[in-house]
Image (tube, rainbow, N blue to C red; front, side, top):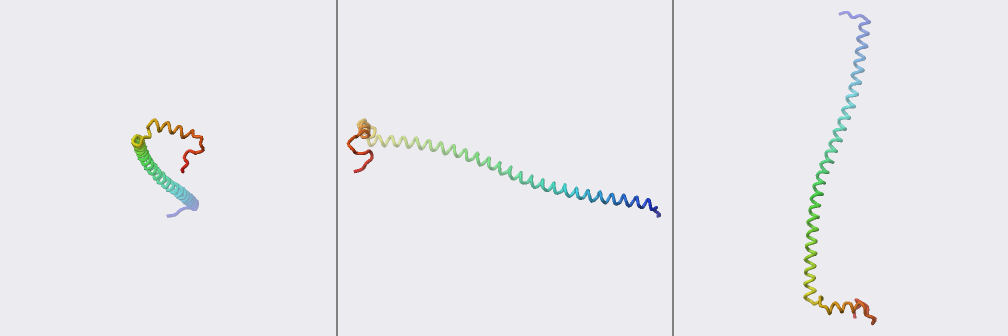
Length: 119
């Protein structure tokens, strides 16, 4: 098959142009592929952070519930301690009016004996 020189030159130019476009397309494809891989990496990292934040939210809710239980238990123990202290004070007579009057007298003593001093 005979091809004229002008036709050959035209085909060669089109071929060169197609090769240039192919190289440019491959380069652009590599760029987009790299971008897609980076996006996948970021998405995986964000997914991990989201999972951790969900777990942290669950752990925080659990900790808050435990805190409410602990504070309720502390209030219960304080009330129980107050009742036991009152019973002890009653048992040893610290609620007697004479003892209360003596405490006022002790705090106003002027004879040089300091409050809390031991002999």
